[in-house]
Image (tube, rainbow, N blue to C red; front, side, top):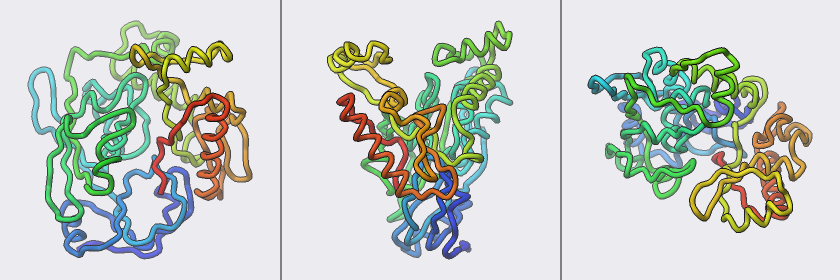
Length: 337
């Protein structure tokens, strides 16, 4: 029997802390509850995970399903690797902490990323040189129209930079119930060369780091750079880092010698969106109850009482100014509802 709640505030269920209501809210704790919802043919339906990568611009009509499917289960292993089945409603960071407590390697660089496990493949989350697709095996999902269960393997998910098939061709069609990851039990391949990880580890006096040390360093760096959503409403990085042609990069470098980049291919580079936004004059700017964070221009913030429409308008203004100044399009990483 599902529990249906009416006109429920979602302020505590989204990290921007936008105070809008769900006309109807249903918590899904197991597949049986999901099948009950599908059988009722309720519509329209939205699926809410951890609420860490969405901007709510108004009340949600229809039915909002909150993914609360939990559990971490070992389903296969050998002497080198282990396959873990994780409930999509588990918090991602708690899963990372579980893996580290068992000395399992592969996702330590993804520590302290907010949101749910189910959202990880949807967004193909990544940080500090690692993306979840590097350890992803498959996921279990249920089609919302007909209740058909399907196992999606890695090559079916069309992973890209903060992209997957679930944000494009199959958007809003499937409810992810579990995600299956393969982690290393030994001979960990540690990723130290992105951002300040190596410097942080050396500063902490560690000569031979392990997965715990990597995780600690990542957490330390993220806390120093990004605002805590429990204190200031935000969804982390609001924009994707754009990939541009090298010809455009070199022409910009003639005007802005300090412009940073990361090589992607022989013809393209990735430019930090935060740098573009900062050089466009938005870093630290406030606009009534919202603004751009003072330490990280990539993060839009709600200082309290701000509304999603105002944050969206600010994002469009930033996008326009960056385009006018640098001839570069920046696109939101955050999902707009």
